[in-house]
Image: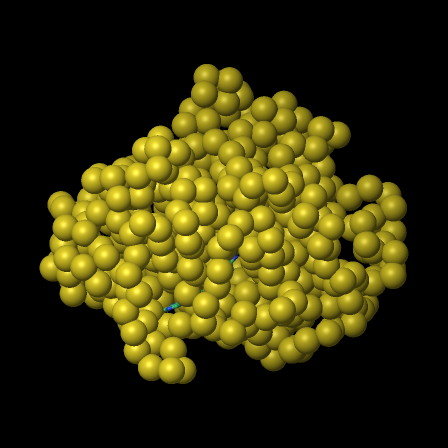
Length: 468
Ligand SMILES: Cc1cc2nc3c(=O)[nH]c(=O)nc-3n(C[C@H](O)[C@H](O)[C@H](O)COP(=O)(O)OP(=O)(O)OC[C@H]3O[C@@H](n4cnc5c(N)ncnc54)[C@H](O)[C@@H]3O)c2cc1C
């Protein structure tokens, strides 16, 4: 009898889960309510796709493992993504000062539009596996509280049931999984939301002549001053464009949608570098604003009795304040856990307890990302759903000291990059060498002003129309 797996959602989590399932299922059907574009184009079902999406090394590494025979890094670079070494390719102002740039590049991240990333990953999965995508909106799960047996879906032709030996919900932030589970009789899902009220505003510009190699530039928000957070970032994307993404928290930090106000916001950040860079650049789009940015977690791994043959991954499982750039990597790491458990269980899609084990393992990267995001977000004024507790105060005191050290210590900086990149868990920050470096403080003085080369300073001066 042929074994069918159904995946709800053709975003990153869905396509990567489909790749994992294709190794053991005879048929993998991905259902998405959206029309998926033929090229790297924005689509309705991914409203966040207009904003900056940094793909960390941990996420990319998982993708490499998941999609058979595809060198995903090369594939994405060939499609137009940029590779940014965190150690040498970034000018970043943290709450504790500018990070130095080092000769050693450290781990890298990829930057491109989300449209390009999804299109390239989807293409790679479809070309290298037998996975098929079908347009349909899933309405609910079928089965019982012991075992899921498929989905009920709606298409232009009407409603139908699709039987499945395994179902993955990867339907994103708006997933109805809690209602669907309740429909099966599973009603003890605990949820938590911590919401700093972050608003994102993004605009694309043509990369100015001669500025193609300018480092990715970011002015980070400072959660620790009792004021709303405000941040700005210029990152290179495909097609010789800059994506300029601003983000600010509730109560006065929110970036504007008006183009003139957009520039003013960048100039009022703790350093005006983002505004100086874009003051003379040619805008290519309007300003796009979005507000769905809360940290939201469903503790599915803690449900008393988890149904067999159902796994929930990606944003359907947990979402994070996007300022920390983790969601896609957590989605990819979760899909890799699915692949690993499937391998361990032989070919048994229906093996009792398999889905529960995946759910528990997928909770590990969620926990790491959640702690990183929430321990900072609780400090912003007006954050709903959380306030700093003793543990947050301890984590914060150590992290701030570590970031201060990282402004002038390669050892501390590389520990930070590893954790940010999700190539390793937060325990990396407590290794003896890192703790020692943190306690000793930075061996080099903090950089005064943005760490730019002479050539880059000349580019900045040439682009600057602010008179600054
Ligand atoms: C402003 C912003 C910026 C971000 N920046 C970053 C970043 O820099 N780095 C990073 O790693 N992450 C970032 N993220 C997070 C990232 O966008 C998500 O973590 C990621 O999209 C999760 O992928 P997913 O596949 O789980 O969900 P999605 O990408 O949202 O995909 C869900 C899919 O499910 C489909 N769907 C929904 N309901 C149904 C249904 N009932 N039936 C059928 N199909 C359905 C949708 O059409 C969609 O295609 C950012 C998020 C935001 C909001």
